[in-house]
Length: 150
DNA sequence: GCCAACGTTGGC
DNA sequence: GCCAACGTTGGC
Image (cartoon, rainbow, N blue to C red; front, side, top):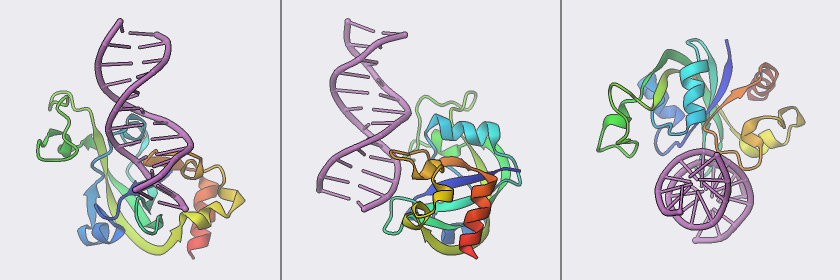
Protein backbone atom coordinates (compact mmCIF):
# COMPACT_ATOMS: atom_id res chain seq x y z
CA UNK A 1 0.00 0.00 0.00
CA UNK A 2 1.42 3.31 -1.06
CA UNK A 3 0.59 6.96 -0.61
CA UNK A 4 0.29 9.70 -3.23
CA UNK A 5 -0.54 13.33 -3.76
CA UNK A 6 -2.72 14.09 -6.78
CA UNK A 7 -3.27 17.59 -8.10
CA UNK A 8 -6.53 18.67 -9.65
CA UNK A 9 -7.74 22.07 -10.70
CA UNK A 10 -10.95 22.52 -8.71
CA UNK A 11 -12.48 24.47 -11.60
CA UNK A 12 -12.33 21.18 -13.47
CA UNK A 13 -12.71 18.52 -10.77
CA UNK A 14 -12.89 19.54 -7.11
CA UNK A 15 -13.11 17.36 -4.02
CA UNK A 16 -16.82 18.21 -3.94
CA UNK A 17 -17.17 16.97 -7.51
CA UNK A 18 -15.51 13.70 -6.53
CA UNK A 19 -17.75 13.45 -3.47
CA UNK A 20 -20.80 13.90 -5.67
CA UNK A 21 -19.60 11.39 -8.25
CA UNK A 22 -18.37 8.83 -5.72
CA UNK A 23 -15.56 7.78 -8.03
CA UNK A 24 -13.99 8.98 -11.25
CA UNK A 25 -11.16 8.29 -13.68
CA UNK A 26 -8.16 10.56 -13.14
CA UNK A 27 -8.27 11.76 -16.74
CA UNK A 28 -6.20 14.45 -18.39
CA UNK A 29 -2.69 13.64 -17.20
CA UNK A 30 -0.37 14.42 -20.10
CA UNK A 31 3.01 14.07 -18.49
CA UNK A 32 4.97 10.85 -18.86
CA UNK A 33 6.30 10.71 -15.34
CA UNK A 34 2.85 11.15 -13.82
CA UNK A 35 1.41 8.66 -16.30
CA UNK A 36 4.06 6.12 -15.35
CA UNK A 37 3.18 6.45 -11.69
CA UNK A 38 -0.43 5.61 -12.51
CA UNK A 39 0.35 2.88 -15.01
CA UNK A 40 3.24 1.18 -13.25
CA UNK A 41 3.14 1.94 -9.55
CA UNK A 42 -0.34 2.79 -8.30
CA UNK A 43 -2.38 -0.08 -6.96
CA UNK A 44 -5.96 -0.50 -5.91
CA UNK A 45 -6.19 0.46 -2.25
CA UNK A 46 -3.46 3.10 -2.40
CA UNK A 47 -4.44 6.31 -0.67
CA UNK A 48 -3.94 9.85 -1.92
CA UNK A 49 -4.23 13.43 -0.87
CA UNK A 50 -6.56 15.31 -3.21
CA UNK A 51 -4.81 18.61 -3.87
CA UNK A 52 -6.42 21.72 -5.35
CA UNK A 53 -4.01 23.52 -7.68
CA UNK A 54 -4.12 26.65 -9.86
CA UNK A 55 -6.83 28.24 -7.77
CA UNK A 56 -7.40 30.90 -5.14
CA UNK A 57 -6.57 28.55 -2.25
CA UNK A 58 -4.12 25.87 -3.33
CA UNK A 59 -3.77 23.05 -0.84
CA UNK A 60 -4.90 19.62 0.29
CA UNK A 61 -8.67 19.43 0.20
CA UNK A 62 -9.43 15.80 0.91
CA UNK A 63 -8.54 12.13 0.66
CA UNK A 64 -9.24 9.60 -2.02
CA UNK A 65 -8.45 5.95 -2.68
CA UNK A 66 -7.35 4.21 -5.86
CA UNK A 67 -10.26 1.97 -6.82
CA UNK A 68 -9.38 0.75 -10.32
CA UNK A 69 -6.02 -0.03 -11.92
CA UNK A 70 -4.69 1.97 -14.85
CA UNK A 71 -6.63 1.87 -18.09
CA UNK A 72 -6.57 3.97 -21.26
CA UNK A 73 -7.66 7.57 -20.64
CA UNK A 74 -10.75 7.95 -22.84
CA UNK A 75 -10.22 11.67 -23.38
CA UNK A 76 -7.18 11.03 -25.60
CA UNK A 77 -9.49 9.58 -28.27
CA UNK A 78 -12.07 12.38 -28.15
CA UNK A 79 -11.43 15.12 -30.74
CA UNK A 80 -13.74 17.41 -28.77
CA UNK A 81 -11.68 17.08 -25.61
CA UNK A 82 -8.88 19.47 -24.69
CA UNK A 83 -6.95 16.30 -23.82
CA UNK A 84 -7.32 14.83 -27.32
CA UNK A 85 -4.09 13.30 -28.59
CA UNK A 86 -4.03 12.68 -32.35
CA UNK A 87 -1.09 10.33 -31.97
CA UNK A 88 -2.93 7.96 -29.66
CA UNK A 89 -4.83 4.98 -31.05
CA UNK A 90 -7.09 2.40 -29.46
CA UNK A 91 -4.46 -0.23 -30.26
CA UNK A 92 -1.66 1.90 -28.85
CA UNK A 93 -3.03 4.28 -26.22
CA UNK A 94 -0.49 6.77 -25.00
CA UNK A 95 -2.21 7.96 -21.81
CA UNK A 96 -3.46 5.94 -18.89
CA UNK A 97 -5.34 6.74 -15.73
CA UNK A 98 -6.45 5.01 -12.57
CA UNK A 99 -9.87 5.52 -11.02
CA UNK A 100 -10.17 7.05 -7.59
CA UNK A 101 -13.03 7.01 -5.13
CA UNK A 102 -13.94 9.69 -2.65
CA UNK A 103 -12.78 8.96 0.88
CA UNK A 104 -13.35 12.19 2.77
CA UNK A 105 -13.21 15.92 2.60
CA UNK A 106 -10.77 17.61 4.96
CA UNK A 107 -10.18 21.18 5.96
CA UNK A 108 -8.28 23.07 3.28
CA UNK A 109 -4.64 22.65 4.26
CA UNK A 110 -2.86 25.43 2.37
CA UNK A 111 0.48 24.89 0.66
CA UNK A 112 1.86 27.71 2.79
CA UNK A 113 1.13 25.72 5.92
CA UNK A 114 2.81 22.64 4.45
CA UNK A 115 5.88 24.75 3.75
CA UNK A 116 6.00 25.72 7.39
CA UNK A 117 6.87 22.21 8.56
CA UNK A 118 10.47 21.00 8.22
CA UNK A 119 9.14 17.42 8.40
CA UNK A 120 7.62 17.97 4.96
CA UNK A 121 10.48 19.84 3.32
CA UNK A 122 11.40 16.89 1.10
CA UNK A 123 7.98 16.60 -0.52
CA UNK A 124 8.21 17.04 -4.31
CA UNK A 125 5.20 19.34 -4.13
CA UNK A 126 7.22 21.88 -2.17
CA UNK A 127 10.33 21.80 -4.33
CA UNK A 128 11.12 24.80 -6.41
CA UNK A 129 9.72 24.58 -9.91
CA UNK A 130 7.80 21.40 -9.24
CA UNK A 131 5.09 20.72 -11.78
CA UNK A 132 4.43 17.01 -11.44
CA UNK A 133 0.73 16.45 -10.92
CA UNK A 134 1.14 13.07 -9.22
CA UNK A 135 3.86 12.49 -6.65
CA UNK A 136 4.59 9.79 -4.07
CA UNK A 137 4.17 10.62 -0.40
CA UNK A 138 6.46 8.96 2.15
CA UNK A 139 4.63 7.10 4.94
CA UNK A 140 6.11 9.45 7.57
CA UNK A 141 4.90 12.46 5.55
CA UNK A 142 1.47 10.89 5.22
CA UNK A 143 1.20 10.34 8.96
CA UNK A 144 2.44 13.84 9.71
CA UNK A 145 -0.08 15.47 7.39
CA UNK A 146 -2.88 13.27 8.73
CA UNK A 147 -1.95 14.68 12.13
CA UNK A 148 -2.32 18.22 10.81
CA UNK A 149 -5.76 17.35 9.45
CA UNK A 150 -7.12 16.03 12.73
C1' DG B 1 -0.86 38.95 -15.02
C1' DC B 2 3.98 37.82 -13.92
C1' DC B 3 7.59 34.88 -14.28
C1' DA B 4 10.64 30.93 -12.94
C1' DA B 5 11.09 26.36 -14.00
C1' DC B 6 10.61 22.63 -16.66
C1' DG B 7 9.04 19.36 -20.54
C1' DT B 8 8.50 18.87 -25.42
C1' DT B 9 9.34 19.79 -30.14
C1' DG B 10 11.76 19.94 -34.28
C1' DG B 11 15.61 21.58 -37.23
C1' DC B 12 20.07 20.39 -38.04
C1' DG C 1 21.33 13.17 -30.49
C1' DC C 2 22.04 18.12 -29.49
C1' DC C 3 19.91 22.16 -28.09
C1' DA C 4 17.31 26.52 -28.88
C1' DA C 5 12.73 27.88 -29.04
C1' DC C 6 8.45 27.37 -27.45
C1' DG C 7 4.48 26.11 -24.54
C1' DT C 8 2.74 24.96 -20.02
C1' DT C 9 2.44 24.83 -15.10
C1' DG C 10 1.25 26.93 -11.00
C1' DG C 11 2.27 29.83 -6.94
C1' DC C 12 2.27 34.42 -5.96
